[in-house]
Length: 204
Image (tube, rainbow, N blue to C red):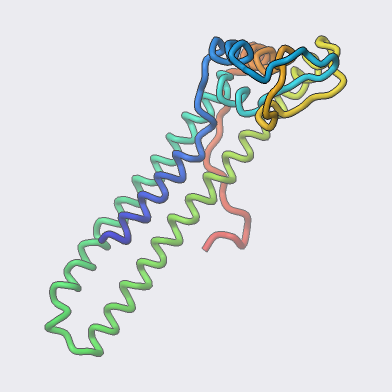
């Protein structure tokens, strides 16, 4: 049924959107300041960091993204297997509905509607679990990166650290992102994790 297909599509889209930011090469990142018309002079003590770039370019961030996609795909396959027989029952109900009494149509239709709602609840639950897992993994990577950020901050004699992704323009000479990616790659390259369960009382 189209409704069911749209639910699965929504889950697939959610998983795709939950992947970490698109990977860009270090060369592209390094080339950005040269082509930036709002470059100007470097501001002493002002440094920048892109958390998105660190997650996207680091080995551990890329590995975590692939693992999350894998887990999401496995769960979506299970949902797809549940959807197919329900689709068949809905189609059969539609084909025979004209031969049923009003009471029978109402009874069987309500039963199918309840099953559709249950299925939609499972799709929503999967989306929540992916969101929860992604947040926890990003927190873990952030914790691994924190001492590297601090070291780079001190070595560049920074006095202020800005989020590069929120800066509209400026000289990015003191961008710590590449330093942090290199340090993170030398420290950790992968994380082992599974989908997080929903907090107690959340799952339906």
